Amino acid sequence: MISKRVFLALPLQPVEPAAEIMIRLQKRLSNYRIKWVSSANFHLTLYFFGEIPVPRIASLCELLPVAIKSQAPIKFSLTGPGIFRKGKEPQVLWLGIEDFGPMSELKQTIDQSASALGFLTEDKVFRPHLTMGRFMPRQEVGSGLDLLLNEEKLSAPIAYTVSKLILFESKLSPAGPSYFPLEVFPLIS
Image 1 (tube, one colour):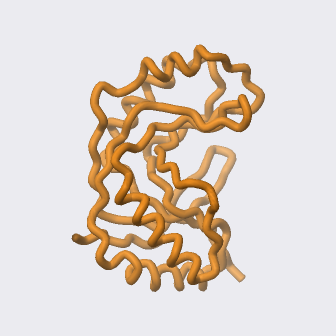
Image 2 (cartoon, one colour):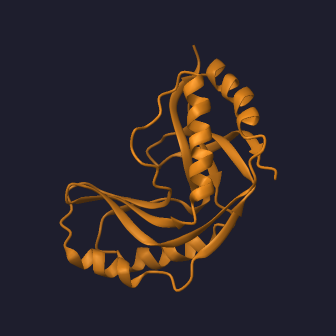
């Protein structure tokens, strides 16, 4: 049976404000081995479904519009950078999200809908973020990295309004992932 690797996300448009922050971070973090995300791929993941058969994708595309039929566009703000770590080792460099209450409510709705189709929901707390890059393994980092990121806090959050959800197919390659929209779900107030 044919399957595809898929996830549901809010697109980030325009990408330029976040891309400018990433360029600044690339210069300041040049001593670290980081695989940077292409700004063309910026998005906020709400649900990663993984590799699933195409008929299940069709079921998702039928269920999601019903689940989000009264969902208004999502407003949020990007804030300064931070890091997800595994133990002491940095893994993901991200920009934080402020005012994400409505996004969390949408995530709960999507989780309930996905659960109805037999998908598992995560037990961990939803921490919306915009991934800037991924640290290569086994790097020595000290408190200097945290201090540097604190210096990069934004003077004012960058406001966004997103009026659609996109179900993406993710194709992996040595050059990095490529994302292809499979279905667009408008958010209408």
